[in-house]
Image (cartoon, rainbow, N blue to C red; front, side):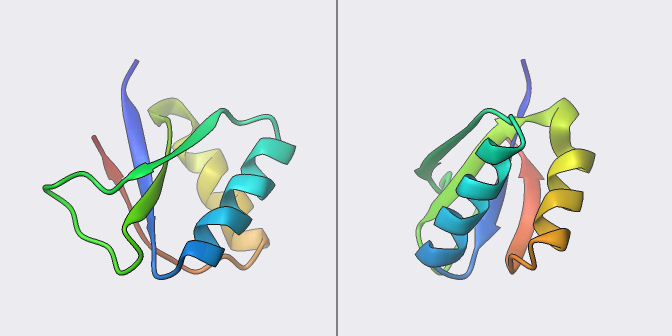
Length: 72
């Protein structure tokens, strides 16, 4: 299964996103940011790539500030 990651500007945003996505039944995992990417907070949220459109909607509706979503 292919994964994507969401990068955040802060740890609190990452934790908020994790809570929102898990509430919606999306499997997530907080991981260190992959070396080829960068982030201000150092952690990112991994999820299965087919869920990307759903993840974007949930984070926008939850007003979670993200740095971007990238395939890994």
